Length: 184
Image (cartoon, rainbow, N blue to C red; front, top):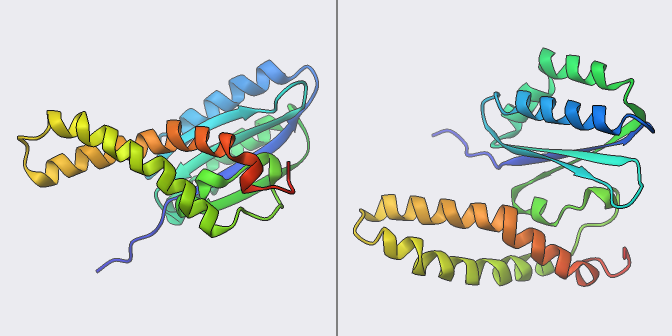
């Protein structure tokens, strides 16, 4: 039986050169589209620093370290990195996480201690419980006549999407001071 691997998220932060912001944003869209063509790609995003800061962060998520490495070592990614050199200054800051801890990752605070595991577990439950109830009473009701495996597949997929892109970003923002009291 093959060993199951955990999803991997990598955040790469760069300082964009003054005047190159729009070209960098177009470049970020293109490299994210290229990453999406690779096996195991689960999603990507581009975050801009608040205010007038120069930092931009590109986040990639893959279903395994093996698939992430295939993307990281690909010729197409290397060409994009070479193309970006005229758009950025300094060296990239890279942060990689696996499992659910990526929900609590803050690329702007790379190098700082992660929130305590019990806080991560508690906030995951705070987000998961109402989300699971909401999905059960909406999607679960709509799929009630389906076979249990199909019903579970759909309801868990909807729950994961809601947790990853809607619920946990809001919860981690709301509880930011509590998660990292010394970092704020």
